[in-house]
Image (tube, rainbow, N blue to C red):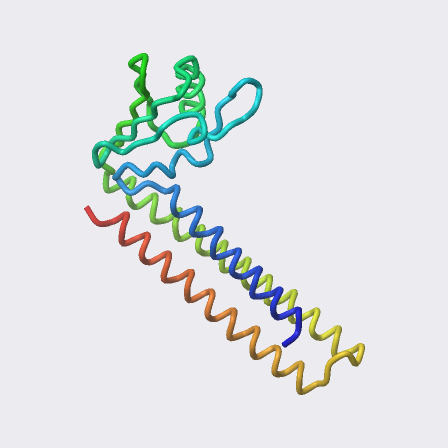
Length: 184
């Protein structure tokens, strides 16, 4: 099999993994510590992820508790959370920071499903771009007589099957996440 096809599949896998990572950070009314994954705090001059400066626990279904190893970081963590886009106000008691997740309203659930579908569509566009780039590269190889016309046809068929497989996976992930968000 052509190294172009192998590279194509690797890129499609990365696109799917990226979408899964995006979906993990979307909250569904339950406390999920992954919403903090992208938030960094200034730790002695270095931007450090919150999960590397303290202990993150989920003691209740709608509560995340952050207990920094260094209590002098409480204000910095609180500030980082306030500046992020998660939309939750942290409460600081001098030892730990608590994030209470409100129950999602119907309006918010619908807005989140739109965002989920948008991310899925962006991923499908990325998959189709990968397919197009691979097809172009294969056609160049055929023009340069590096592969035969029959090989080109066979490779194009493989790339199309891969594209269908990964767009199908994206649809499944999107549907599952939407179902998760809309379930009360």
